Length: 310
Image (cartoon, rainbow, N blue to C red):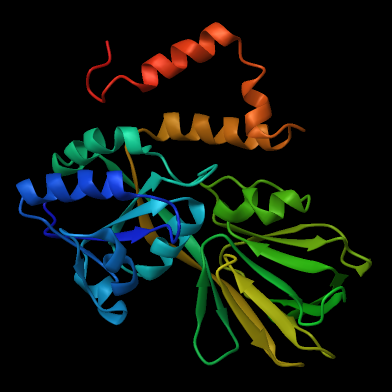
């Protein structure tokens, strides 16, 4: 791997202690320092050094995200604009972005150290029109600040007036985010290999009522002429934009790098996860559809230590 400082970004609630112990043990044997931001380091125990929030992105040469897609997106935003690779370990639910399970972590670490991996670049959206630019790797969602009130947004593309949205919300998404809120709202799934931006109105009432797909080099300007706008970025950061202010969204290509070991296997699992979202059953109910003998076999296989499989 050739890296000397490894940063951890962890789920705020889920127990990640087993993965942290695996990381710190192997890192220690290879002379790699493990760090985290103070709020995370305080609960991760010995072997993880605290680094100030403002210094974290500059200090680390590699980042591990221990959590779900939300944690992964947060890690990606932290190192956006840097070549820092980000590896996701799934301690969440579905985990579309994440390839590695906790059970696979030790083997994955060995592959990283051996340099046996590839990097998958991810683009993000940059929102300007406020004090500081804000980034989103999944989506920018625009609503009003008043609950149960429709958002009304004028749209310009590359400086040309294109119409207006009047709907419950408007979703602007990357290809990565096209399978999130955009997909739930009836928007298109965009191939991750295509540098495109999706715009989807949620429950439209008038104006533009169909999704729009734009090139990655387009400049999108949205303006609410008669109300404040609540803007959510990846569901994590929320900003309020004043009435009549310009909200400009552009794509920033190749903003961060995600570690991949097997692109084909990850893509196949992602397709299965996406298809499961369309089923009218919860995950615990889906298990009941699996024959009991197969469930018993899966439980036995899960109990086999990593590396001991036939």
